[in-house]
Length: 366
Image 1 (cartoon, one colour):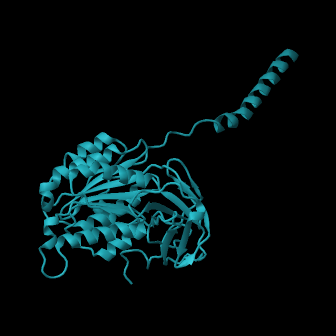
Image 2 (cartoon, one colour):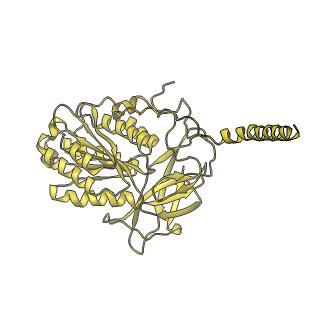
Image 3 (cartoon, one colour):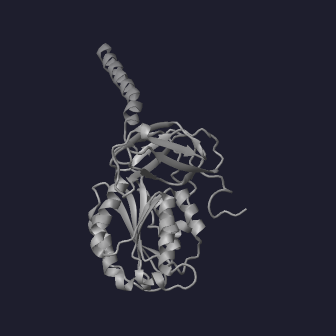
């Protein structure tokens, strides 16, 4: 009898211990598998223009750090400027130091925190004019785009868009060169020319979908704007808001240069438009006279984008009121050699979340 009680007590003790262990075991168990997130639909650049996200990558973001993949974490107020420096013969200058730069915001000189020059990956778009006026140049344009693809590095990503009467996404962002090469082979010409519509739509698309901090468009066109629904000022505002650099390659027909008896010729108007768009975004315009120039131009664009200086500073005006702040960067000359700095013309002072006030956002009318 006494032995039975001992066995019974031992069994009760084992059961109590098991009961105490159950919560610990279940707490370490894995959660049931979650259903995968739905895939996002591919977004056309034209849709990106019409459907703006509330958040954009601004001059200001959160947590400051620039890593080798071009991803940044910013201190809330720090402004980063991508700056290209060339001499008067357009040769890039790569050996400058912090003391060689001067930054002015709204004409007030700022204290530069740091200047660095690192090769970083890119998010860029190739935007190809395939309007009827480009029919005779399509092969040249396709070869030019292929040259750009050849310049891609492992961590770069690119998309391809074409424009006629309206912009069309041919290949969304990818790191796969073959996908881009195949997409270039699908280009064909027809219809009118909506250059400004294409730039504003693809700039929005690049800003919203690009994963790298440094974003750019490379637009290949004859510059003959005819059918856009937006005006040049709207495009300039979009480029400032999106902070996307634009490099333009203009195959301008020089034979049209002397065909106007009143005002500027079509060729001159086209050149002036492309130059203004490039300069305002901190990019550059090229006007090749022969297709043999394109490989060198493609290499120059890729190198210039990848190895720009990053100039950072805390603005003296710390208000986050959505106003536009104009920028100018000066570089000290090297002996008798004048140096030219190219960067964006300014930025919008966003709030802590990187947003603009509703009344300031492009497309919102009071």
